Image 1 (cartoon, helix red, strand yellow):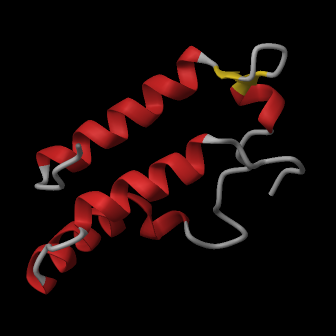
Image 2 (spheres, one colour; image 1 turned 90 degrees about the vertical axis):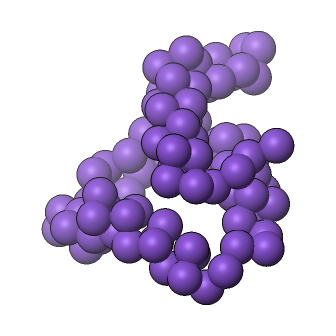
Amino acid sequence: MKPNQGTGMEPRWEGETARASAGLSTADVNELINFILTKYESKVSLELAPEGFSFEELYDYEEVRVKPHYFELYSKVKNEIAQKGLKFD
């Protein structure tokens, strides 16, 4: 929804979740997806989707380091999914 929205955290998250989900059974994957859908399904439309944040809002671009509030959100979501059975390295 906003220009310049990509950061390095998205590919990191995609890689970590891909590795963590490799080898899961279809039933386990479906359970995880259903859990995730309960949190986001109502927001998956152009009218309801949050605007999101630009790179500058999420990163200290002089140091190219993720800002603490964004890393905390990433950690919270990762821990929540790990509690549902996804095993991260």
